[in-house]
Amino acid sequence: MKADKHLEFEKITAKALPEFEALSPGHRACPGCGEMLALRQALKGLGPNTIVVNATGCIEVVSTPFPQTAWNIPWMHVAFENASAVGSGVEAARRALLRKGRLTDADTTIVVVGGDGGTSDIGFQSLSGALERGHNFIYLCFDNEAYMNTGVQRSSATPEFAWTTTCPLGSASSGKTHKKKDLPRIMAAHDIPYVATATPAHPLDLMNKVRKGAAVKGPAFIHIFSPCPTGWRMPAERSIEIAKVAVKSNIYPLYEVIHGEYVVKRNSKNPLPVSEYFKLQGRFKHLTAQDVRTIQDRVDATMDRLLSYARLSDDTKGRP
Amino acid sequence: MIEIRFHGRGGQGSVTAAELVAQAAINEGKYAQAFPSFGPERRGAPVSAFLRVSDSQIFLREKIEAPDVIVVLDASLIELVDVFSGLKAGGSAVMNCPPHKRKSLMPWNESYRLVTVDATQAAMNNIGLPIANTAMIGALLKGMGLIKLDSFQMPLQTRFGRLAEKNFQSMTQAFHDAQIAEPSGEAPLSSPAQELDFSGIIEKEALMAWKSLALGGDILEPGNSARFLTGTWRMTGKPVFHSDACTKCGLCRLFCPEDAIFRDADEQFIYNEDYCKGCGQCARECPKGAITMEEEAWV
Image 1 (spheres, helix red, strand yellow):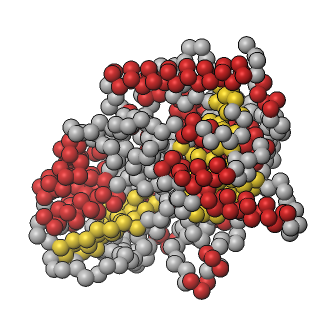
Image 2 (cartoon, one colour):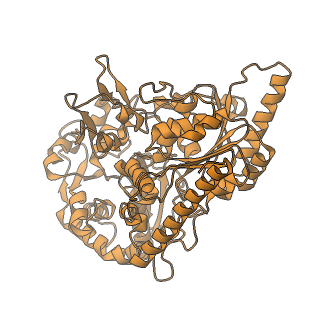
């Protein structure tokens, strides 16, 4: 990847995986949870010098059934609305203390963790504000495409046509009628140094993207596709498989925006049809052929747009 | 008043079962209440639900510590939770149990009346899914009388819509299939469960007084969730590692949401049975097929 030249960081390879675990076992996530898996991998990439600020959501609830906690690193739970504001405060306070010489660990990474509800709906404005102010933290959005913690209610990150308990199937409703909010694109529009998408089925890629996020000065946003067997109505052993299919079918393209430059990973010249992705999940089992065509057209258009962004970024550098 | 405690796993529908019985009882003009008890645990975790049915108004609001009846939706729970805890002498235990496992329940039959049924099979036959909660209601009715089978038509319709009829058939089959064994009463009344060691598996729920909390509700011990053994959640089998096929790539470890796979002294990958929830991702993703999921024996 040539854009890596713009970004100095220590790469993790399959041969030298970090042993560090930020989370102890005994957490209460459902069997096969793609979100806790992605969280485990991401924090493995960051190492022990990490402070986590966690918005309400599945991760908070399953990791910390008071008075127990799975966290082995400093962790703070705050409300849905203000995780990014608290992350900003932690970062600003530490900057002041470092300046005064009362702290010396300048390498510590501050991570704000939120789900799709805590990021695209309730915590949206505080996140946007923090990115605009340029606080030096990584925001990890674990997107399982609905409010899974409270029982699968739709969020603005729920994809179109998906079943949830608040957009049920019946004579008056056949799943969500609105499109999924394109969070990484909105975050990239804040002109922050680093935005990326990742999945737990590509653990090295995920860990290295989190490392890049830590290496840049200023905010980084990493959007992590987090399969949820419970809410997506699929068997527990399919979380990784579904993430692989999501990438191979371009439902979830992997890309980075490094200092405004798009780097798109084009996984194959012949992507899988999106129907391969839908057929693995109960939440899409009602889709008509017309629905599938609608999504296929949109996915193709999105991929074309991403690739054209990537070419545009290259053009500005005078490359072909 | 009759007090019934349901034991199941998250996702098996124990809470729904208790609510359905309460609804049917109310439709018959009785008084009833149903409520669940669970923490932040997820699918597969042991949960319980409570049900009171009475001919007169019920003023009690607390959990049921000394039930007249227990309904156990998943007999593998017997090893994990003291499901017989507080069950009154001569009380009834309604157990979901395949016929070939029935014998293993006999020690409990000395003190308690056993109602056994293969509710999972009844559900598979009628609904096509192993969701045994409505079938277990059928066995409960066979064992206890309590409410007429027909009184469930309406609550089932409200709850399941299209699937109501199938659930009713499942309930009816379990009603007919359930077998009742009166207590043999020869042995002194003691719970065989007392011989099982539950310490270290089940952390009793305890509310802490505010004075015993750290300032700000801080948790001062990192990673203390490791005391909670999520291995009790396994429902669909355990991973078995075949070292001859393993190339030690380590993907299984990287793909375990619990961090429950590690290397033993001989550098072989093995799983930690204390924490593995049995999701099966390691087996599915192993590029060499060196991991298989195999059924676990219980009792």
